[in-house]
Length: 411
Image (cartoon, rainbow, N blue to C red; front, side, top):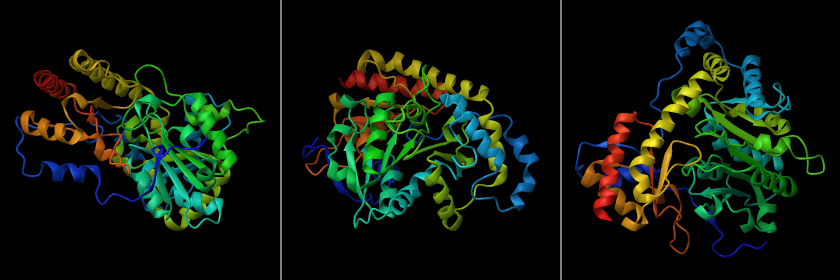
């Protein structure tokens, strides 16, 4: 299917500053109208697992060693076992060849496109990396370091905030080396279903590109565990292509276990890709410290702290529904810990963000700062603000009450 002119944006350059730097510039010199409440950064504030210090203490000697680039056998086994339990994979993940440790998923997202470009060896002067719009800014950095053309697909409400696969034509896909997609989506919190994943897998195998599936919010859901890309691949029959070829899923302990500072994540999936990537990383990437891997082993064997973490977030989403639902309609996403609020009745995202800070001391992030402008000046994030629900419930309640009153007064 041929793409329309507005279906995607090509030749996107890396932004000169990240969204938070832009926000700081926007609010520089402005005085908050009330005691400030910051609801911008997705940095977990819930308690870390109570076993963290104990496991680190038991493994302190591991800091003397250079860790193996492919991780400890215990780490790979723990990740493979967790993926098997979480997604009912029936033992399809090979712990020895299908898992790699990462210094947080961001490292894998940043440098995966280089490996995809080199391993595919398509002989292109300007390979393509596809990413959603809005997007996690690291995806654009990945295209930049791979010397690839970034192509943005608008992710809008009508398509569950997922990149529209119908907008892609064969010529573009033949030039593609990497396709970045998050599910649950960031910042919107929507979830790809099995049919979406399987269709994307089919395109990747037909046109020879790699899918980098960012599943970092997979365990922060309301009721139903999100389908994962490995789970969708499991159900493909042999005629469609079995196994995990062309698939790399990335996840970490940052959101699941509130261990953002541990910088420990993993990549799993295509064993041939991971084998070659490990050789590249052995030259270019820092290893994950063995004590951090030991904490990960324990964390992925324990679901109690994850269930409690999810309960705390869901409690705050109930508060959001109570305060904002009567004004905005349903505001609770399928997963994640952000509110993605359509505030177009009150103005564009930047104007509303500035007003919320100067009038009620609430710091939020304009949705347009998480997206890229199209050539016609449109921006899929222009009508939205993103609010992080990582703060404690009491503080979150105060922020939501302020926002609800402001929206009601300004309506």
